[in-house]
Structures are given as structure tokens and as C-alpha cells.
Length: 284
Image (cartoon, rainbow, N blue to C red; front, top):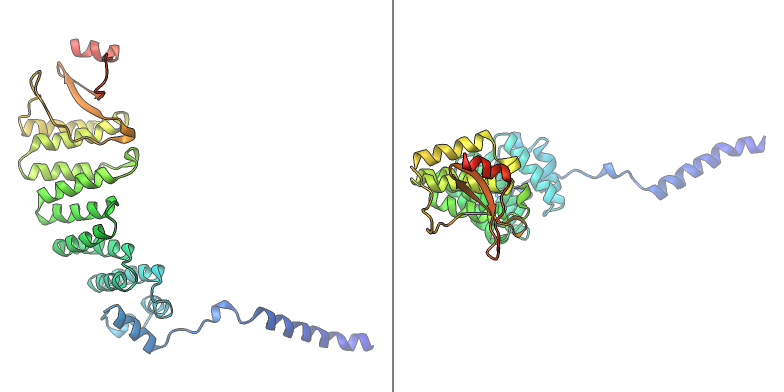
């Protein structure tokens, strides 16, 4: 009887001890009050109606930034939430201010530039992309974003320069997409240099002919060649090729008797070899 009577008491004591050891659940974190939210908004120069900042998800992410003012995930979530709520310009402001007050965070600027591109505010996009480049001068993305802004904003020559730099800074050329090359070709076309536009696409094809030489790329090149009445240089002439250099190997687009192909450039080569099928085709 005594053991039966003491069992509930022992269980109760064990429960109390367990609660004391474990502490309160993590989810019981106190939400930020309205003053904290307003302080976070003021720090981010964010001005949106109470109907927006006073409810989730914006309220939740502002609360996180009130507790941790330089929480990089929270600012990304807040920018996305404001974007989806239709307050894109305000999202740009918040992202930019976060970068300024939290150690020049590049990711926030990158997100802000992308929003500005969707807003068609190309001048502002150029400005923020330039700041991104200053923070990460050896990263291709800032140059690519600024190239897009110049391209869409009517500055094709500046776009060409940035596209070329972005392509050069891209680490693994085997994984690079055609977007930069197509943008460069489009910009060349805008300034009346169709032959250079064709060379830009040929440079893309030369990275991986087996994958990149398609009916589409052949059609684009042919269109630009016709548009510019492009001629191949005469024997003994010089020509400058805009080429990429994956794995330190340079491939040049060539045409022999009307047959197109790609040669590997080797300034110290003693012999030149081509496939038998290529020779047969070029000889007709």
C-alpha cells in the first residue's frame, strides 16, 4: 500500500525535474512588439501601410530583423514577401539599406538589382550593379546584371563590354549558358556590327561544338552573316576572334571551301591534322 501511494508523487517529482532541465520550448520565443517592428522599418527606411507590415509574412520577417538586425536569411525573406505583396520599390530600398548597415552584404544588392530589372528601372539597376561590382570585382554576376541593364536601357556598347567581362570571369566555361553570348550578339546587332554578332555566337558554339552547334545556332549565325555581308579574311590576312578559353584551350571557328568546323589554336604546332570526313566534305 505504501509503495502504491508513493508512485504518483515520484512521477510528479520526475516530471518537475524534467521540465526544469529541458526549459521552455524553443517555439515560445516572444514575438516582437510594434515598437520593435517600427524600429526595424526605420532602420531599413521602409515605408509601407500597417495593413502590410502589421501581418504575416512581412510582420514575421520584420520581427526576425528586430531581434537579429543583420540576419541575411530574414532580409531575403522580407524582400521576397514585399515583392510578392506588390511593394517592389520598397523591397529595393530595404535590401539596399540592409547592405549599407550590415557590412555591405552583396546578396541583398544582387536581389535588389534583379527587382529593378523587372521594374524596368535600368538606370537604378546600373547604379546598384556597379556597387555590387565594387564589392565583388572578380565575380561575373555583377557584370552580367549590369550588362542586362545597359542592354535593355539602350546602351549596347556598354552592354558588350560588360557581357565580355562577365564571360571572361565565369569560372567553368563548360557550364556557361548561351545568355551572355546571345546578349552580346544582340548588342552588336544594335550598333550595326552583324559580323561581330555572328562571331559572338560562334564563340559560344566553339566551347562545346557537339552540344552547342545546333540548327538554331547555325540559323542565327547565317542570319547575321547575311545581314552583315560578312566575308572571311583573305589568305595571309589577320582577324581578331572574341573567344573564351576553357581549360586553356582556344577553339576557332573556321570555314574551308564552304565547310564549317573548329580548329584548336596552337602557336607551336608543327603539323595540322583534320578528320578524314572533314577533308572529304570540304573537297566536295
